[in-house]
Image 1 (cartoon, rainbow, N blue to C red):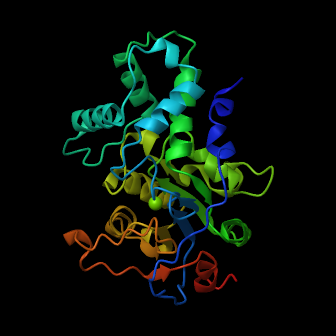
Image 2 (tube, rainbow, N blue to C red):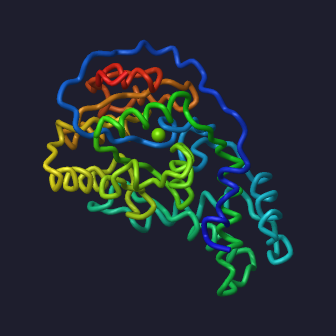
Length: 295
Ligand SMILES: [Mg+2]
């Protein structure tokens, strides 16, 4: 059994989840000269119950943790129940330890965080037992942040990739996120056959997240190697701070995706977003094709 199979719960534990009307007016126009489109994942390409990777709200999820521990068959190896506050504390500590001038938005590897949490609860790591921790982390994510493909996403990706637009991803992500992206593609296609591998950036691999500049800088460097200027690339995301501010700081064109009330992040209280005006405001993904004259 390989690592992908340990993470299959992220796909198998799903049910249809449709976006909720966001009450935002779209702003659509033709954008000329876009050679590359880079996407956010959670709340943009996929409907996300919590609006982002992980569980961003304050709801106590201790009960979900207990179920995930049982599913991973770890309950007999821990000396007391793991609480939601234990996971939050470990993630906050890990982020605080890495935060610096060079890393203003740290990212954890959530598998490391879970390993530390269960170690604190009496689990004695057995070398080959990575699978249990990955299963625990994946079941917890699948149940606390249910996902489903955003309506129109497969057709949109298909049309964009046929048009020779260079496609990429910048995602605040964890190890199971690429499986969700691969699930959006037509059968038998691999992520690298549609999204350019050098234009894909997952925060858990860099241990930096959006809206920090690290991932956007890595992207614009990769675009430059392909002869593409930042202003010839369009970034599409649901979060005015993490996506639109971050990408505009990197000199990219921006499309705010406000197609689902759950994940609409207008960030109106943040001064960085007060004068921010994205080039497009989308309330459905097919609108992007119209703006690029690909529909
Ligand atoms: Mg998002």
